[in-house]
Length: 230
Image 1 (cartoon, rainbow, N blue to C red):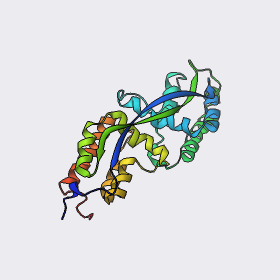
Image 2: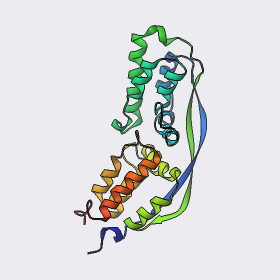
Image 3: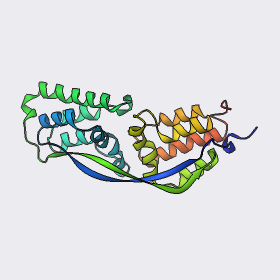
Image 4: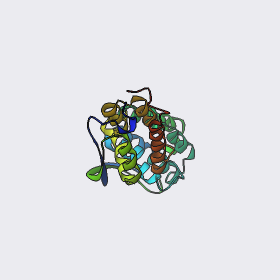
């Protein structure tokens, strides 16, 4: 039997990297009430930008709230309770932007109704809704089996990990990531794919994500995981 690490994939995994060009959207908020209206009308890409894409900065800064709406509510509006409510929205619960938008709007709407005095108070600085244009480039790293995947994953930049693990969630409707899709479809490693899919991008840095993936892959290579998968 061919060891799981050397089993040939049906198709290679091409590691890619990406750069983001931020563009400002039409919506702008100077009050909590205006932020609520902006959340109702902004693009899906903008919701994604201010919740998932901000994890790029979370790689370097592990303090504060990890979505922009909560951060603005605290820093620009001094609404600590609203910030906590927005930060408590668990983005892992959602497999589509519409559901995430609805939850954020629900949190904001309830806060505005119970704290009407805060709704129209002018913030210290405006909130500009934004979204990203994505520019993708291939890297020199390509994996034809699980051993090559692990070796390449150790070498690629965190921008590559962000592209395959975070950006992919919008392209795949928030349901998975490129690594898990490839492991399941090209190597029949469904258990390993699910382990990687469950890695918490909300609390880890991108380097932390890399290490968790490598740990799971190493267990599969050692036969501790994936051994039941032919």
